[in-house]
Length: 131
Image 1 (cartoon, rainbow, N blue to C red):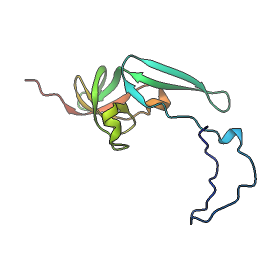
Image 2 (image 1 turned 60 degrees about the horizontal axis):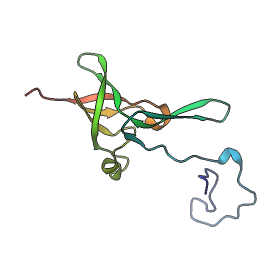
Image 3 (image 1 turned 45 degrees about the vertical axis):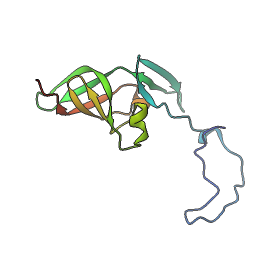
Image 4 (image 1 turned 30 degrees about the horizontal axis):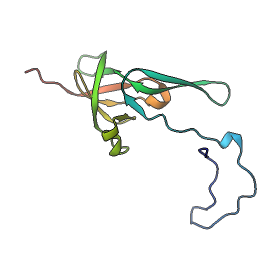
């Protein structure tokens, strides 16, 4: 069954509405990419209007920006620490915008949408202590 972004059969208050037409192609949605940690894997999809969207299915590295030194580094992702979008995503290692990832240089918050942009950009929030 396809993902459908059309109007549902109920109003805001819960009243049942009769849908008087068929589903339209422009109301069609797609399944989420659920970007995981692993060997780099991307998928290019055509969007409405002929544009292209790069979806990251699996990523190994992130572009982490350090506010203190004002520099960005490409670092390896070690794991997912916290995900406010869904606590089960931590267990499965799924990366979304706003999740906190563990990297080689410390903890970082993801600022990009990997399943929409095809890349993981993050901001360093806690540096790894050298000991």
